[in-house]
Amino acid sequence: ALGVGPEEAEKYQTMFDQFGGMFAGDSDQQRQGDGGAGAGAPPAARPSRTTSKEGSTAVQRNRSPSADYALRQMVGKGAFGIVWKVIEKKSRKLMALKKCYDAFRSSEDGQATYREVMYLTEMAGHDNIVRLLQVIKGENNRDVYLVFEYMETDLYSLIRADEAHGILQDVHKKYMVYQLLKAVKYMHSADLVHRDIKPANILLNRDCHLRL
Image (tube, rainbow, N blue to C red; front, side, top):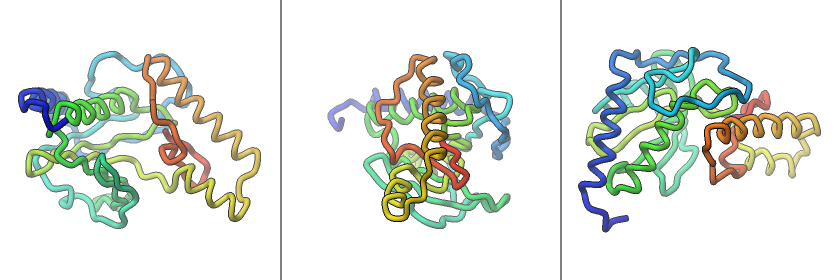
């Protein structure tokens, strides 16, 4: 990846900037709704300003996320970057903030960042797919911050807790499988393959609501 020329990485940064321009004039707050629970028609094959009546993704450029969010706890870390639980200062709502380090340092990284933002934007509104609420381009013009709806736990942590305390009943398991199949069917209807479905990537709330 380090051997890729800067012109290819620049191409994806330009694409990302053009993507941000589609949202000019949008508010910084995500309009949330129930979303489409069914696995209906696939999303449109082109970027749009909003992909459902219920949701849109706000974009801010060249600012620090600390202006709007207060860090609470680190919830994940990997080659992709780092994820924090944060509180939005204005609404006091819990959110998840993902920092993508030097998102355009190579064509592979630029493509991955652009693809994640575009796919999640196109699939906005489905009740079982994680919601991307906001995209923030860092002040250093290299990092990208993605703001998601906060989910309390993941299936990996729940399985570990169930092994220790036996908290899951058959009805819970069936409901989770049902929601997961809805999300997968919706993506497949748009000719998308997840490629990394594992318990740690299946997010849950205490009411057993699942998002992939």
